[in-house]
Length: 430
Image (cartoon, rainbow, N blue to C red; front, side):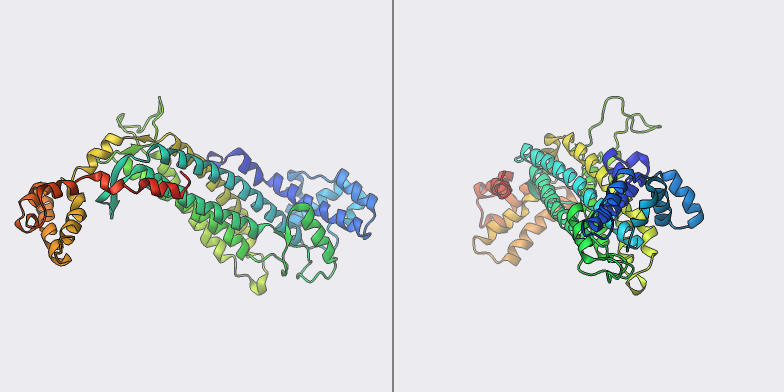
């Protein structure tokens, strides 16, 4: 991921330096376990812990000859450790240490993402309460439907973020595993107890069975979970973008002093950050496809997944971390215009109350089909001829045969639609 979209903590987690450090941590943990079991001298394990080090540039230099990154790494570490380096990587294969290190990094990435999502969730809940009773029009198919509140919209988003938190928690569990079982997973040259001991030390659970690699359905769940979370963010960002359109402008991104919207048009206030989030969600959905493709390996083990994961694991994690923090800031500072919401709610001349009229007539014993026909013909006069819907209803002999003027007036009260808002918020402890 480019620096522009990389936050420091997540960027460091996926840095090449940290990747090699995690691999070294696995190697040292394995040596400690072997020493505890008496397979290598305890002094050797202590010496390895004291002296083991690496330099990324040196690894690259060696790899230019070996064309094998793990061997280049081990050679570099041996230059620091000396004779006791002969015990490092004993009975292991490259994927033992690389896969286990990647699982630690994915696990730690989940922790950062969970922290991000929980912070976003709190902002959404706070602003939902702020606009709990702020009336606005609910839209279906982009067309005015019936009144709701802006707080309900924010609360809906918070509910989806809650589900995303659950998804990430599950993905974290799925990737918090390790594998130190040798070339084809049979423990041919390593005691299974070492895998268990390393897992306990590193906070990982040994997989029950592996080939040379941990199977990639786990990685696919991690990346697809990130893609789902990114799509949630895009959904929210897209709604903000729509609400900021000039012909709606019920809410908009905060526009800071000195900010410029266009190099050509000084008047522009554009939802650039929400547009950025929408664009970046596309990247993570694309990465999810690549992760799903990685599940299929020849005889459950080849190296076709490796090159893909070097890109999609860091990029997806960094992307979601950045976008979650960005959208949190957007919603925290979101400019909301209740008066415009109320104005827009009344733009259709009362059409949004058509269902109330329909049900009121039905309650008088009229067939629904007849009542629907009567109300719709008056609604179409508003759509096609610009006639006031309420006036048309009050002049319709079929409707007024059953409803008094007072009963019709009662149908045109938006507060009726909001009578259960407190109950809905109570479901969320608000």
